[in-house]
Length: 630
Image (cartoon, rainbow, N blue to C red):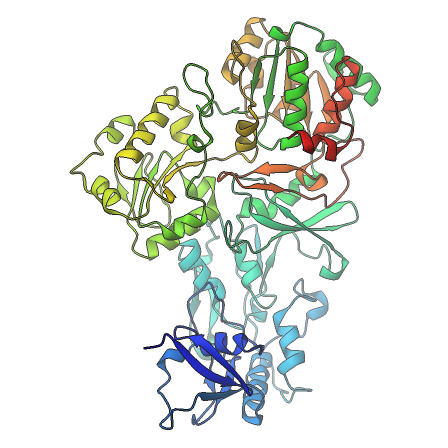
């Protein structure tokens, strides 16, 4: 028996899978179907009726999003079913639906932030009537308070329920609902409660009208005024696909792009709204500390001061890379450190025990990657989380884990008990609980019997003092549970820093006899280290750097800049083309959307200029030349 169905759509014959909806079949035939409530990643609601089509022989138009082609009874004569999207009945049905949708919709397009990219505008032009026949009063709905990120103008709402379904199905928080019926129906939150999901901003993209818009972006710009640059996110280690919209020298908003292998089409709120901080507390000129106060100086003065600080012995210099450093900047810093004889370099500012064995030898790449790939979660049939909080550390990945849970994949957690938006089998906390996972334990047996078992270990387990031992224990547990199979590696490390895997790949780690981050900080406090170079490193305790000269290369006036003796202003990730390696080892690049602020320069260019001042000129003058060295 065939798994496909033959249909005739507007005279075009197509074969489509039986699980396709009529809407998908029409699109496979090259016909556009208007819709508001339908979304391919959400459940079928069928409540906007905009997708009505004429199924030849049916007594009335059919909602194509809710009709599965496999459920269509065969015709007696064996001929394919015919679907018309351009018949007078289909056109009249859509005109009627659009007219009803516009009855209570306010005519405020000139002041609506959705204007210019509004589905209702587009479909009213394409499928609506030429003029309105409605002369009665329109209804009004009170705006709801959904928190500081999502702005509501609920009179515009057409009750498509996309936001309701997203919150319940993808985000996993039942905080948005549809109250009342008929003309009184309205979208609301529970007792005016703010949205608490880390993915709440995605309802802005899902809303087909201007009912839910971005509160920080309100009235800032029109979409046709913006330059659109495709880039990647660096707020976590996933490397989600994003689009940076800018006007003039300012980033105005950040939106998701579709990347099925990483973020599908969602982004976290941190990713979406970080643009607000790209223009605040920026370092836009070099500074040198004189008499206890930072003083703005020229690049020549700042680089001379930095070169003077680097004239000490290589054993007295430490270099630490921060979480947002790009591969080009780290490569230049690594080369400069090598030319100066510096051995104490580290990209693991959180103290995680990755990349190096206890004897200082380099560990294989598989020991610190998300080996199954993010998309591999969709294939997993048993999952164990160890020392990780994916809801906070990688919200988009947590949505994919929730999707696996909805497929009835068993999930277990070893670590702090937290709300992940889905149920899990709690195994306790600490290494002792890990030792209990052995043959006979139901979770261990579930992994052993699974075809695609998955173990994810997070930074919470690896930043402990015994993080190296924990990593070895988790690896041994994964091997015993059968996570390493032909064509499948179910051992995964979830990173939280965008720069981490790139730094580990290039060996931005202590050389033989060198110190790690903790050793550099302790050495600076004791006076053993005279100079510390911070490449955007702000998560260390800068108060313990003692009397060491601190050179800070970064984009914002963060902790490192407050402690620094010399500040060399750098470009933010939206202001440069930089290479990043995500947690699964995927190499991606950001693209410059706006120019750097003031006198700021790209990290690698700053270090290249500094190398000339210390008499160790690096062998590349352009970004292309540097990338050939990577």
